[in-house]
Amino acid sequence: MSTADAPPRAPAPPHALTHPRDLPPSPFRSGAGRRITFDPQVPLRVFHLARRLTLAVVSIAWLHTAGDAARRRLTSRHLTAREAAYAASLPLPSRRCEWLAGRLAVKHSVCAHQLRQRGHLVTNREVRVDAIPDGMRAGKPVVDAPVEVGLSHSADLAVAVCGPHAVGVDLEHRREVPPLLAELLTAEGEPHSADPERRLLAAMPLPLRWACKEAVLKHYGFGLRVDACEVALTGWRPDGRFSWRAGVGLLRHAPAAEGGLKESWAFEIDGYYLAVVST
Image (cartoon, rainbow, N blue to C red; front, side, top):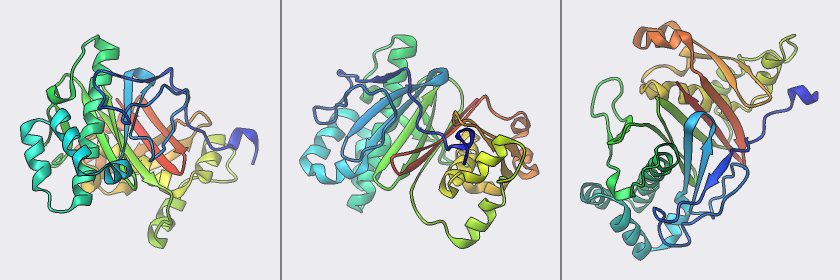
């Protein structure tokens, strides 16, 4: 493989935020870093990305081992009364940790984004996270702030992205892809193409291809209500940008998808695969 065909590494964002007022007590605080990293032993990290996007990463694994008292403190400090009541109603401890991690990720991404982009200091409890209740976009997270958010969980981590326009994010951990799905995903990309973007796409790990498709569908709020085959990947650049084409099934529900999106990024980071898209 030539240097031009080498898979992209995680981007180096302009700044990785430590946000002391809005973070839980140590050890949830994370130091500033120069590169996006995924470490389940670190409770929280927040990164500012290109085009006014903010990424928050919360460790589900850390919440599992933190103990009931720590989780109660986090719930009391960061969730609204309604959110805390819902968390308490979840019967499985593993589901409660995953749900709490997701809520914390969304809230931290919104607070950090508002502080950096608008100069507004907002606490996590002031950010109410809801979901669209029904229709094609049922389950898509929304907040009571002039921003858009996206959320994904995989293995030991929950990630949320916040931006001024619609966003989509998907996180997948390194795993074997089922044979039928692998066959479908492998059809995209041409290892011997004259186009370097198509050659690099042929080298894209299969879970990352899946993350790209799901991130696009989440951007429009559909998730897997629309077949992932309706997002055809067409290229992957060395800087991590990927290109795609909408199928007729996606265009039926989202005609604007024909014009694509301004930002479509895909990276392999510390054993995880991350795709982020934004209008």
